Length: 161
Image 1 (cartoon, rainbow, N blue to C red):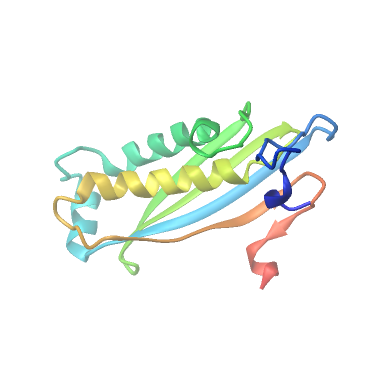
Image 2 (cartoon, rainbow, N blue to C red):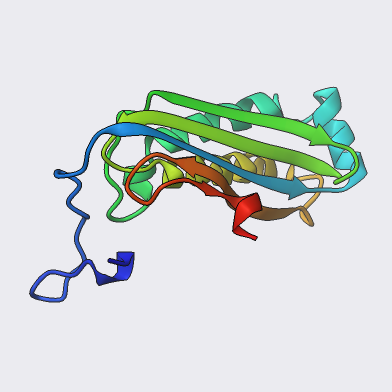
């Protein structure tokens, strides 16, 4: 059943009933990037952003966002997440910041939306913290890399070709 077909008798969307699903270990890994001018990378690297520690603040924002995904995305279940790791790395070749999030829990529904939300908000936070010096930044390539657990099985972006 596709996500679009979860309508009640009145044609209204509703949360998917996961009550009958088995609890399994769930994992999702997502990534994205913020492309910026080399001068902006230097500001982030050297800790000279006027708003403070760009990478640390964006990491915290990503973690907080994953925990609040159900408040941001309609019909997502509130989840008791076991692990949220958000890693940001400067990439001079991009040039910019690469963001990766890993979310784990044991439960009845997947954590893909939480991982994608963590990456999205971390990227937005990077943008916000240095937009005064580089409004031409681009947030790119936010995607699910891997998911495991649940009835639909595993997914790997590399294998999905």
